[in-house]
Image 1 (spheres, rainbow, N blue to C red):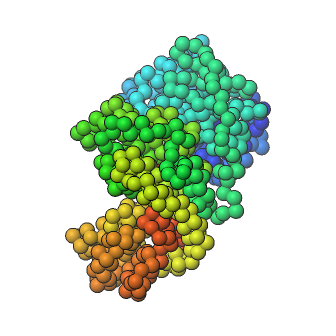
Image 2 (image 1 turned 90 degrees about the vertical axis):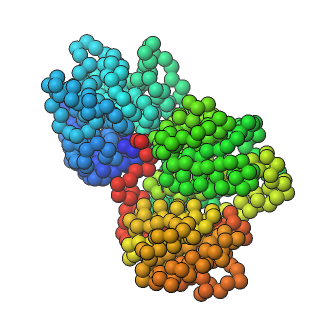
Image 3 (image 1 turned 45 degrees about the vertical axis):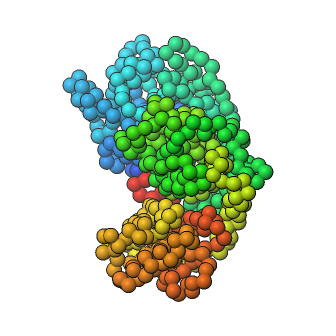
Length: 608
Ligand code: F6R
């Protein structure tokens, strides 16, 4: 949610900022802006819409000036509409800044500052912070002193990149509950919201800890705390810039869908030993479950959906009580007894504010936290007791795909691991389950090779405005994911329903040609779901069945049938996942939607 980039060095700062902003654009794309410093002037250039529009304006301006220092921002609007006035950078007096996060007490601060004579130009919380920094930035005061004074009054989350008049050629950065990194390159120093934006320039980075302020100069970064200056820990990024490129694909989403069998192999292989799950690779032993009475899985959006599947698998294989919670609700309706609760937090980005808040709450209650994360250099990784990384590589498209599939694989492995621990799963049965998981990689690559039926279905659906996904058992949770994907990128309204529940009210929405897509991997519930398909067919629905091969003739089961690949429930689930991802992609393509950057969204949701 909002991306920050900063650069000071020997090269052209405007090019650096624009390149960084293009990478950060997935964090928000309502508007973009830069503040650029040359030897003679500070220019602030802003544009609503995409970074490309900003780039055109910057190129025109660049002809006259040589910029060596600057800060840039790509915005996902929270406070204030999408407009140039509300776009960052903001300037107040002698301070110019960019911000990611939310200043929760901004109205109170704004009223106070207005009484003191400050006149605001925007509706944003950010401009209030800017005014506060300016207020404390008096003659002969080092910016750090002003920063520490101002942040004492700010409540909320923030990462700031700030330039102070009088300290030309320096950028100050600080953060609280929003990510911010410093990159050290051969041609200068960088500031960025995430590691991918540093990769074109450098792989050497340092995290900024809370309470620290960093001052970037052309060839050094000075890290301050309240007590003085200290030496940062520099690290080397494990990721390559090439991994974050679109390659030959028309969209990141398509690239990421296609990367899934590889991502599954990388994620699963190191966690299997002797045919059984083994998390020693992650520094996790069976001790993690000692004294555990229940498991709570927290996540948002797709991470919650996959968490629902995980909770069911854990209960089935280990008989340990497990429930999934939407992270934004978890703190506000916490379970009565948190004692003996293991938290599994799921997040592709590791930066989702609500997931982080749930984890912080659970830790206050004394719970242990194991997180399943894709992004290595993330806040959640640092705040968890143990981390199980998915090796999906950078996920850039706003809609998650390989993030979800690798999370599902880890949850499956964990549930079998726990099943062995509680002795509810016999070792031989556990080995069979792991064999089934290993076969999923092949299911995924076969579906990718033969997606013709999904493409034909997309042709039949793309003009619809409503759609139902129905299923029972684990299929229902995959329906949640199917509906979310379709809504998110194609803007078709879709709803997931437990197949048996439709007739308790919602079936009244089914009319002639309403698409009803049934996911039917749960073979034990096949006939029940089939009856529910028939009920919708009788009301005129256009029925679609994603079903395993069985004795039923496809014509009997739906107007359009896709035969699921594989021989076991987990294989069927992976194939269902691939089908709903590809279907959403194709439908969105036919509807000419902006697939990688759907409207109103951002990839990393760092606000609550
Ligand atoms: C949907 C989607 C979102 C994310 C959610 C959580 O396609 O991508 O629903 O799953 O915002 O994000 P992470 O996993 O980064 O915490």
